[in-house]
Length: 125
Image 1 (cartoon, rainbow, N blue to C red):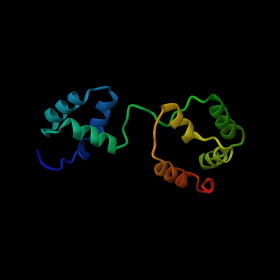
Image 2 (cartoon, rainbow, N blue to C red):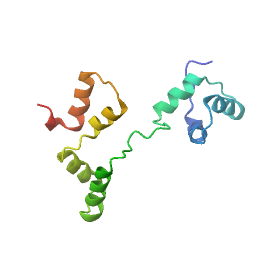
Image 3 (cartoon, helix red, strand yellow):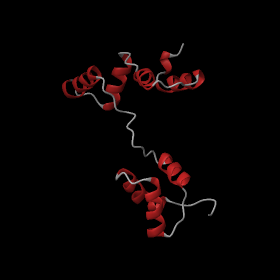
Image 4 (cartoon, one colour):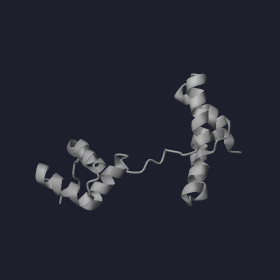
């Protein structure tokens, strides 16, 4: 196999197959049959990840109070997305912490610091 395989021309088809719940092996066989391109399981998974494609929606939350607050800010106060985000952050909804806590994730302290520094620099002392 060549060292770099350009899958950009087939990106839409690969993503579509992925969202149709095709297995990685099935995607590989379809790409090979349709486009005569040999790819490995690793390449397919790496490209899907690089394209930001996942079966999991990590941005979703089931926090009903947060949903209610967002609806209120959007429909009643007519705030923009940026204003809603700023308001929620100002109200100290710690979405990142809640996500990490609920998923039992372990993040190195310096990485967590860098994330907070990017999204809420005023919170860092």
